[in-house]
Length: 421
Image (cartoon, rainbow, N blue to C red):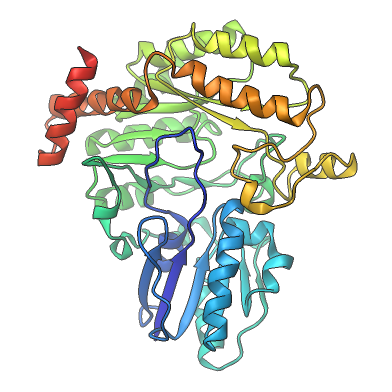
């Protein structure tokens, strides 16, 4: 049978350089399908979706809340053609009840070991409305290598530079961050994959540049160190969310190819300043992730935070507005307090104010959001800073003999060198 798998488009942050990464959720789900299922994949962010009847089942994978309404629109067109449509992915789990109105079935939870049931039900004309595995996580050993063969890799270049491939080494998160829904989706238990399985998957990825998409690698020091040790011979170059700033961890991370990390910048403390210095001392670059609009932030606090960012030598920064996604404490609190002012899910892209801030008007928070982007990138654009990031990884690759010469890459390196000078 033929399954058409679709990843809907969404409105990107207007201030951010537009580039597209190969999606991870769809290729993980595809790896869990029975071998006799032919998969045709469309990423609507880089290509047009074909609306015809040349598929048996339509599957829509939705990661972001800002994608969900577009997913519903796509489903509506196929269902009018008489096609069965099933939804899965993070945003489906967050918006399950609403999505049921637009789908023949919704899949909630992790796919490994479960897709055979779904496909058999479809073949027997007995597709269930809900497949709920949210509280029943599969054995972590069952997670195999994602199906990157369904991706059209040439779509994932930005001005000639190949974007990172995505991979995960663990699931679940022991932390309970206020605006985050990971505990609801993946549970509060840190579930690391066996390191040999992670290495096995890394060895299949042709791209030398990776994004380890785990919510946090800083959840088990020994596992973290063992993972980095195992990665050293692969000579991959990678970015990730937070890693621990213990010297022995950072040293191993650098040896394993750590390129840059995302670091939450939540205050102007010496702790943040010293943490960034520790990364830099180990040759690891830093992209600051800055969340604006928390209840403990006044207008003065935000302005001081922006000034602080100009002092601590961040390599990149990404600014977002606190967004109350469903199944987070933020959503529950703001709903109870009557402070959510916009439930148009298209606007939940973390760049638009959809709630009443505690210490200012929504319009003022929106102004401060734009001010943050404009101020940080006033002297050097985000694209220029990104090219410096690329130059850094190219230098690392040349040094250890893993750089793959591509015509477009060389053009970008030349442009980057002009920026550097």
